[in-house]
Length: 260
Image 1 (cartoon, rainbow, N blue to C red):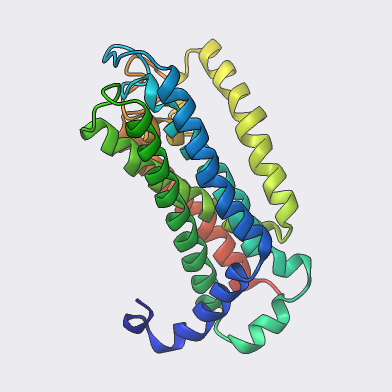
Image 2: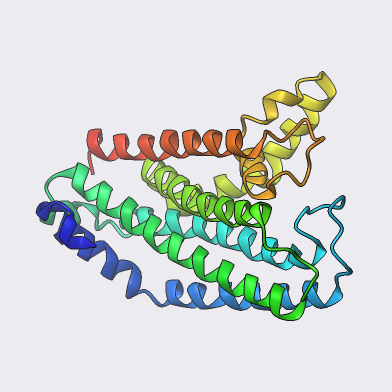
C-alpha cells in the first residue's frame, strides 16, 4: 500500500506507524475491543428471542451485542485519535518530529492516515468478531441483509470519523487529555441537554445536525424511523463526515500556522 503513495510521505508514515504499534496501551486496547464484542455478542445472542422486524433494533435483539462492540470501538477510536495525535505536545516532542519532517502538511497527513488506518482495522475486527458471536450463538435470530450491512458500514465510518475528530481536537487544543474530556463532556452532557432544550422549543430538526445524533443515525440504520432527532442514515453519514472534515481540518490548520 505504501508503494503507491508519494515517496516523500513514506518516511513520516513509517514513523507514525511505529509510534502507534510500539505502545503497549494501544495493543492492549486492540485486544480488549474484540473480547468485549465477543462477550457482548454471545450474551445478547443467547438471551434474545426470535427476530422481530417491528422491534428496535431492526436487525433483531440478538444483534444488540454487535452494537455494543461498535459503540465501544467508536469511543476507543476517539480516545486513541486524541492520544496518538496530541501526545507529542504533551511530551514536547513535536518540535523534534518536525525537524525530520519539515513539511507540516505531510506530518499531519501521516498522523491522520495512520490513526484512521488503525481505527478502521480495529473496527473491522470488532465487527467480524461480533458477527461471529451473533450468528454462532443466535442462529435464526438475526437475518443477514441490507440493514445489517448498513449497520456494519455505518460502524466502520463512525469509528474512523471519531478517530479523526479526536485527533483534530487534540491537535487544535494541544492537550490530548483536555480533548478527551471535551469529547466525553459533549457526548454525555452537552449534547443530551441540547436534545432536551431543542425538544422543548420544537427544534428537533436542529439536533440532527449534531455529531452525536449523526453517529447514532449512521449506525442505527433505520431502527428509529419515527424519531425527529435522527436523520436518515445517508444524510447522517454526510453530517458526520462534515464534522470530521471541520474538526480534523481545524487541527491541521493549527499545526500549519502556529508555533510548535
